[in-house]
Length: 373
Image (cartoon, rainbow, N blue to C red; front, side, top):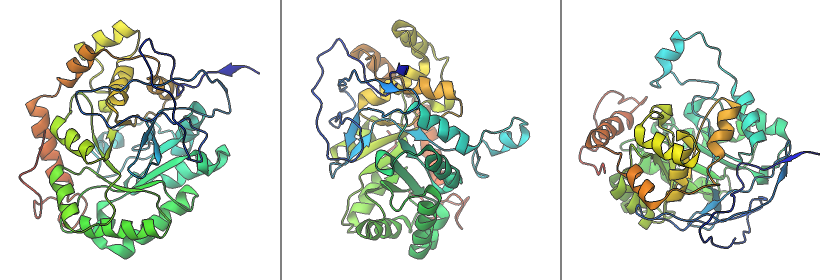
């Protein structure tokens, strides 16, 4: 039978590499733990020469330890706008005008599973968890070999504990599981996110969630959460991170707090692939601009979450473990964030914390003085 190397198996590097560490996790993954990195440092990757049957991949990829020691895959598959475009998303209007047929989420997730992805980033807002669950069920892949993350949306957060409990039950049913590896507060909804997080603490104690965390939190949101008397600190903060929005002070703060950073918009929605710095670095490594963006993420120690509805792009996006960027190249990429990008981030944050709630379109309760860099 022909075999092919999984894109998730790191290849040998010319640099000195750390030895593999063992893991008590029930997945067949090899644990290659990154230490949490400061923005100026870059970890080396360990390696494996394992190959896998083409139609039955058992992926081996680096993992990043959460605060309780749980290994979190360093790369995952994002499901936002996969098979469905939320009505309040920025792309909804253009998608309505387009006649291009969407692939179903089931089809896309089935392809991602075949490529070797085992961490799936889902959300109530994405409105496709049932299709994701269908693909997982049809794949026959054991639950313990998957890492499933979901997020609770602003409207549910606003409604309170019973709504959050009902939403989690629906997510579990849709995904075909009795627990989530990770559940996040999608946005820090003013006056509601703290009570919502405390509900997640209860659900974790009941065994429905293995780890809990947050998304789109600025430093001030996190400090507000800590000051409220929570008993379980967030394991993760999912925020936009790429060379064009690299908020060094914020990133350094959360890493010192032992909060793992998941990067969404890692590939900047494909909008920067012609940037000359990216193209030059890509050409020097024989890689694509997308692979340079992905490598930058994992080399900084962030969880990298690419997304594509195309099989070949899924493969391309995953091939980031067989080369390393130089310190000079990392610095060049680190310096691509402009003051204008930071101000755009601030405006988007202030717009979105009340998104879809009864206070949508207002600044009621919104933090105006936040750390943006």
